[in-house]
Image (cartoon, one colour):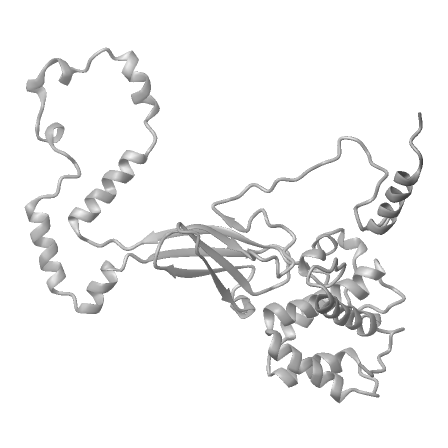
Amino acid sequence: MIINSDERQWTWMDEGLNTFVQYLTEKEFDRNYPTRRGSARDIRNYMGGDKSRISPIMTNSESIYQFGNNAYGKPATALNILRETVMGRDLFDYAFKEYSRRWAFRHPSPADFFRTMEDASGVDLDWFWRGWFYSTDHVDIAMEDVKWFQIDTQDPETESAFDREAAESEPADISLIRDAAFIPSTYLEEDATLHDFYTMTDPFMVLELDKVEYAERMEKLDTSEKDLLASGKNFYEITFRNEGGLVMPLILQFEYEDGEKEIRRIPAEIWRMSEPTVTKVFVTNRPALQITLDPMLETADVDMSDNYWPARPQPTRFELFKSDRGRRGGSGGENPMQRALRDAEMERQPAED
């Protein structure tokens, strides 16, 4: 881009945008290029860190903390999230090119960039600029509660079988377990004449009267209502809580018994009238074995432990002894090339007797 941005005032307008373009170029060069900045998953540790050592992107370059993350990494990640998750590639690419065209050989300010991206795309992005560029909030959206509902068919035979299975699947009562040894025999076991209607009747038995009443109710329903009762649909009422402050779209993956996975996307505007919590009902044709929030780590959610239903443990590791070697490929230690060269040098040395 031939754009003269004020790097001394707003470093991110130069370095952040260049880092984003570099990220795209690296992927065109090699699908598995070891990218350091641009991917949402790589900025999570920084954004979820100590807020006293983090500045908003829209901070003068002389006053920011963690220069690399603030001016390079976070802006590049924000633009990548805009492209992949919020706007879509086609719309983002068109707006980004329009910014480059409008401001070629000129001196844009941050407001000019924000305005052009919105004007060219026709998308209201005020909420995004406010959160990502003017605050130090981070993304941490939790699935706070999941309620699973199925339709009551009102068919006595179907519902009776359902109730029986539910009752049989419940754990045994502690008193009943201990009474098996504590009470040698009950009065009914010793004297059968004590039985009455309630002790002899199956609580899940379907009466002919139940069937007749069910048939009468069904006659009053139209075809669409009957189809709905017989659809077997599942309803998941999910409550989300914004714990990090940044509002983001909700991306949910429903995984079914046969291994099929389905993605549902809800735009960030869902938070507009209901924050910090929002509740939405999702309808599926079959039960979901697993529901995952942000399954592809595209929103930079810093805590994935509360993004699963049913809950999934998140394993981690700790060092028993301190290590002098830095993270592979990171600062503070050898990079992979340096380590490989040292390994090759070691192999060339003659073995000692």
